[in-house]
Image (cartoon, chains in turn red, yellow):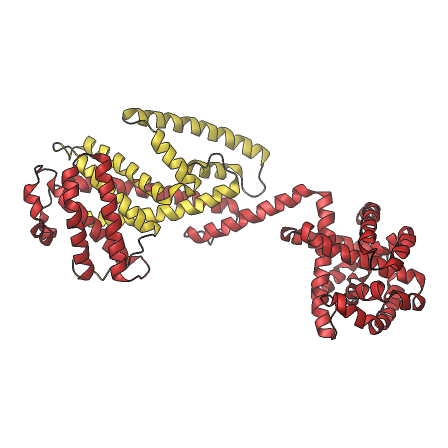
Length: 382
Length: 167
């Protein structure tokens, strides 16, 4: 988080645009309106716990908005931002009575307002923030922080300075009270503080930018989300389709996918052609491949249709052996008895249903089933 | 035959479901086969078509209606009229589709509607994946991924069967 900030800072000084500044001004106006509403809500929310704050924020609303707007950007680049984020909760809410005489009035306003912004953040984060917006937000942030920093550059040093001083004071005083209510947001040692602060900081970014992005163009956000989804799917497909890894560019990948699907479909056609051709010639094949089966099949002699006989004799065994081949080559390990039992059961069920459905030669099919089962078990245990 | 190891088959896997269904329908096809003139080319072609349909059907059935493409395929197979008419209609449909595609290519090249993928490839893919005509690109890719998986298993199983049949 911090190094990202630093990089941001570095690019802040590089890219300063007049156009960006204008945009910034427009945005500030818009946010002012927004903040009035949000402030009011917050005041209502916090009214019970802190009457002083209500008065404060009410009186400072007019003057404070600008400060409030500037604040996050002023502190963005500096390392103090964590403190800034942590600080408001400690400062304004609980230590009010003692602190208000210590700090100058405008600083107090700052506290209140920064507190409100952080509260907004937590409230809005759940509803508004979406992960998809993150990069969008970050991109925007670069430009806006650039302009913001430039416009408020003069303010920065003193703001940081007095903020630092107060921050320390107030931390010392208000810590005990703060701990009780805001233990989640404030930690005692600095390392913890840093990590937590970075979290909060991150949330704050997203919150602010997301809201802005949402307001400006939701279309582009949706478009971005859609593209991300599509590119994810593309990656999945890339794994599926062989030879797709080398190709860059989605059009080329899609071409490759199309070719692959076509080739698979043609392969299926070819294979079914082959099976058809083979199947018709299988008739001529002798039964020498399945002597055991023929020997074990006493009902064969009783079957009336002699021409159809080889098929009926072949098929269950073929099923079985194909299953065996499949098992051998491709399938994940399972216990032999279970596998074969369930497979045979399913096959017998299916052949039962098929015989009842087709009604073509029910007798032979019915006759075949136990034999099929028997053979399967035999094969399974060899 | 006894050289096979003990089978390790997962009966609920897509492959085994497809294999059992397909073999069942194959046996049905064999059972219905007329006794005479089975080796004539027309007969072989007829058988080929039936086997093709059986393979598609068993694939779609073993996927069930969980996927759009399987539903579309089953629907097509169900509504497909039997006999020679089907061939004619299918060719006609193909022709019209090609015309459509040509139109689409012209429009897509002029407008360049999609920033990610040009519409031409997407439309081609839509034709290939059953039921993909009315899908947006994301769902289309999703269906395509699943369809490719299923097709590969289908090809593997059918290869095994063909190998087994061939002497």
